[in-house]
Amino acid sequence: MGCITTVIAVFGTGFVADFASVNDMTMEEIYQTFFGEVLIASTSYIFSMWRFIYLGLIGCTIY
Image 1: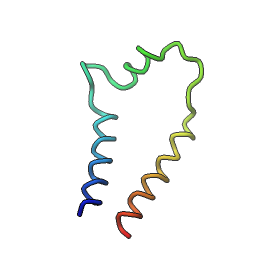
Image 2: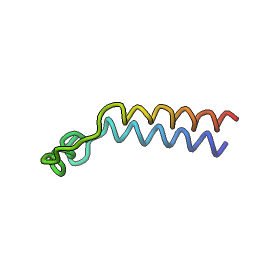
Image 3: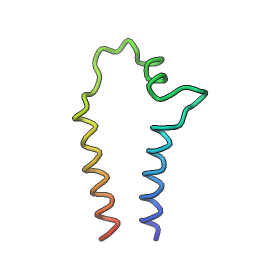
């Protein structure tokens, strides 16, 4: 039961981080405030690795 709760907490935290605002600022606005002048940024394929991490987390939970 603890594993299922952990998976729900991980997905819930990710959802809140993506869609909630902090001090009426989105994650994009916060990023631009602190790292707007950074010329090197991760590409989208780097973030696609999270699908494998989440699949592994779900697989371990089911197992």
